[in-house]
Image (cartoon, rainbow, N blue to C red; front, side):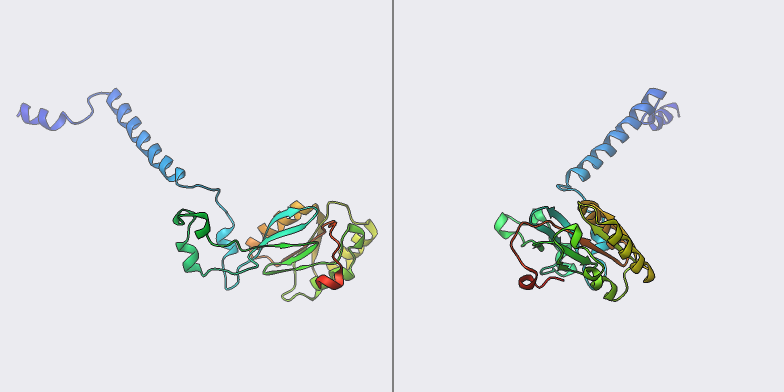
Length: 216
């Protein structure tokens, strides 16, 4: 009987040190599994990707800002279907030439953006931002909740107060901030499915004219 009992219990921990050793091994195994999972991620995770891709229309993303050129926008060109997007990955392409083309578009100058579209915008500096230049925001359907004016140079206080007053009558909250913060705030609220617009002032040195580019 003793031999049978010993045979059954000899695989169990016989001391506190054995319990600690077993727990350490389990933790080490867990860490290895976690390390393998994390090591499979080659790039940073886009926390807004799922929310921005939700719905029948893909929401645009204001990706980059070039002070003397314009705004790089994602989601303005050809869009893959959700099935193709789910099955596509960077690692599945054998060479750079096999990788899909980028869907980014450089808006060459000041830009005014809405959740699903963006347009070139006339003002080339803060002094040219007026209530009339923002008329497209008041005409937007469905109506906008928030309007962010991105400009690295402050707007004239009198004109900014006029814009806030008139937009307030239409229940539109207006805030001015620098271009990068305006882009980031727009992307976050757009990902939350808020009715948001942003007007970005780019002090472009290019010789384009408003009649040639068809901007607002």
